[in-house]
Image (cartoon, rainbow, N blue to C red):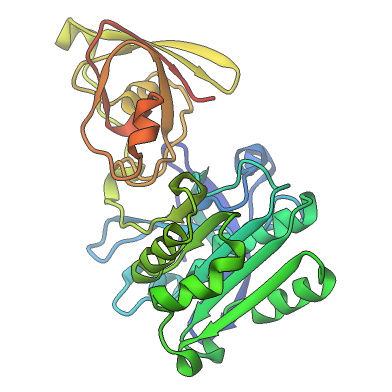
Length: 348
C-alpha cells in the first residue's frame, strides 16, 4: 500500500505483524518510530484512530481499541473484527500486511479505570473484548484486585483471544475468573439472566463493551442489583466524519475583533490563546500550536474532555458527558464556545 503522509497530530506507525484471531477478526501489531514513541504511551482501555482510504476516495477515520496492555511490555496491538457492510473493518482485514504503514492519532479515550487495585467486573460481547482484555491484563500485572470477566459470543468459534484468556486464567487462578456465555448454547444474555449471573459482582466497578443491546441489558441488570450509575462504565461505538484529520480553520482576531482569551493547563504547562467566539476551543488550541488531545472532533468520544475552572462556555453537542460531569464543569473541547471574555480550562 502507498506510504501515508502525516497530518495534524498524526503519526506513521508500522504494521509489524497481522494475527488471525478468528475467521473474521485480525490483530495488528504496531510500532511507532522512536521520535513518536512518547506520544503512544496509553492507559488500558484506550483506542487509536486510524486514517484509512474512504469508500468515496477521500480519507476515513476509524477507531479501534488497544488489546495490548501498557503494563506488560508488549507492543501496541489493535484488533479489528469484520462488520457486515463495514468499509473500514473489511479494508483493514483484507488489505493490511506486515510492513505496511498507517497514519494514526495518539491514544485516546476515557474507558479506563482510575485505579487497578480494586476488584473489577468486566463485561464484553464479541469484539468488545478488545479494551476489556487490555484492562484485565493491566489489572493482573499492575494491580492487586480480583477480576471477573463475563464474555458473550455467538458460538465457540467467535471467541476472540480464547487461548490468551485461558492462559491468563491459568496464571492467575485466584484473581481472574472468566465466564463464557455462548448464544448457541445459552441463548441471548437477557436482562433477567444477567441479573442472576452478575449478582455476586454488583458491588464492583464495572466496565462494559459490546453491542448496544448487551450493554443496555448489563447496565439495567446492575442497576437492579443496586449498583450506582457512576460505577458502571460503557464504551460507546461511533462513526467519524472524514474531517477529523484536517487542520481546523479558525478566524483571525482581525476578522472577529471580539476574541475571548483561553488560559489552558495541559500536561503541566499553561497556554494562553486567543479564542474566537465561533471557533471550538479545540480548534483554537490546535491553530495556536497546542498539542491538545482529541479523536473524533464530533462530541462523541470524550477524548477531548476538559474542565472549566472559571468563565462561561456553551457546548454545541454532547453525546457522552452526563449531568454529573457537566455539574463538575467538564466540557468537550471540540464542541465548546466561549461566552465570557476570559475562560480558564484544565485538562488535569
